[in-house]
Length: 185
Image (cartoon, rainbow, N blue to C red; front, side, top):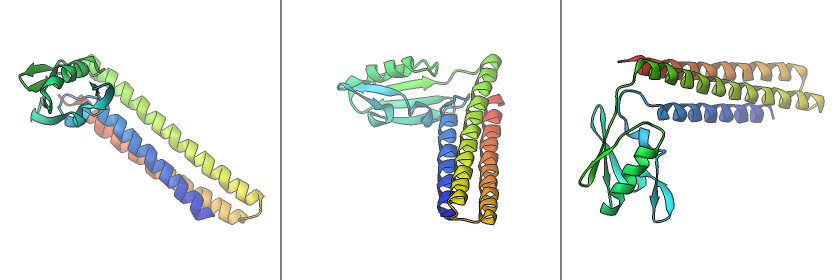
């Protein structure tokens, strides 16, 4: 039972970390990367689908993303979807290929993005602390029902705290990496 609680808590913390890293990937830095357009949705015959399901998304150079639609009729829709997304990008189509240049970030915009990233990190930390609280409550309930001893309860809580510290350190490391990317000119 103790191991089940620990495994469940570790699984939830791992999911939280993965979600945090996914959210970080959506924050735009000065460099181009294909993952930037993953959440851009395009109207494809009445249903919204991600850009990478209707086109090839590649890097042309360090500051330009290339999008090549699989159907010629989709070029205008893809271009409009990229322009309307919240990334502040201005795509330009040249025949069947859409070029998406990455504008330079201003110092003020970099500071705003760092604030956004830090709030995302704090949200991940709060989520991990909630997982820790739930696991500790599970241990208390097991102790109350006399299914585990007080020593098992204490050891379990210590293990959950170690897990929390480990995953919180991972969040801090990912945050530091993203801040360094944002501040790099």
